Picture (tube, rainbow over the protein chains, first blue to last red):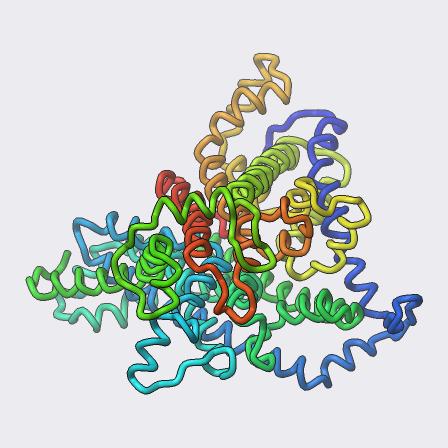
Length: 293
Length: 284
């Protein structure tokens, strides 16, 4: 993709890209380079000098049970958040798509949580499930179920998944609704005339036609669960109890800033960097394919 | 639609209404909690209807801040100002630098053009959360901790907006440039008089997305601001809840939570058309 017609000169365009390049260098390339560089060093406990250790930080990380546990936590967490928010988003979008009138109203009523910060969503759900005053924990207690997410790891995990998915439904809803509305009605009608039931049509026509968008959403939601949910975890559990909700990005933060373990934190950053890189390449592969349709 | 069964119609609405209730419920509870006394909250269950302390609680939060927690006593109005400055700074900054660089990439040929393009392309990949420790050091070395510049600039370093504008510029017919050049129009004149005006819808769409992105920043301001007067509302709310929970002044905390949600929600709802466009076309 290139324009055939363009302006002459080289100093003006250089000036035009300069601000973005400058900001990218100062706040992006230099820090990222630092992360890679630091990941090869080990500062002594007093922070007076650092020693080159090669890939030792990585070797140590990959044999550290806490880091491996955090990996597992991240996989469980991001899968649960992506699948549940996509399933609910698709369900609501499929319902809204059935309506001739009123789909717009429901769209307005359903999309605004996108604007709510994950940290605020965390506070709302924390308030509902607070062990002493929360409404949800009060009624759970009345039903004989002891709720205490500050002590029980599985409950803490459930709560952060719930809070993270809740705010994400609107995003998935919007994309699925757009995808559903792009399916030509004539295909559905033809199938209906041939006697295919609603579920038959949904399974054999709608789902396959939605698969590109579903795949795209899966990648985007995983990236969201990896990084943007930091606020939810920080407000609700701070990674606890006993690290049961410490996802990878939270560990970078807590090892780097709370424990000041800079070598390890840098190595974790590099591992995350590689993971995001892979996800981005997958995402772009998909977008490319969409263009070639 | 294909079928018109009455029962199906009502079930569709019922399903959607249940979804809407699930979405609204936590926010409704928050609103209720922001209008009652502390006693009504600490002796559960919380009532389902708003109380009488609306003005009292919001005035307290806005002008006096939370009485408890280590983030106590900073008026929320100050935090909202900080959030607004940060959000608008990020939004305007990103839109300006990416309009300029997208213009350069699409309408010029210059040395190292491809290299520059790839350098910016790579920044797409890495959220600030990943390079958080070294970025913090950079900002600390530049003496930008506790400043608006330090809050805003590291978050402008991302390429999404540049790509969106580039894609849009590619769809503009070449005849526009030809006509402009024939009339002796300078590049910057073309930029300001033609390109920016026809990009209006895209700018509005990005504005909504970036404003929400900026307002909702959490980790970066959390690290950057040690001065209570520089806190943003989204990050400060956590500091109003003391660990141990019992002693948080919940009506103030919940009023603050409402105040943190209102501006971005208003932006989304009032600019819904642009929001939907922006979301479907970019992704962040």
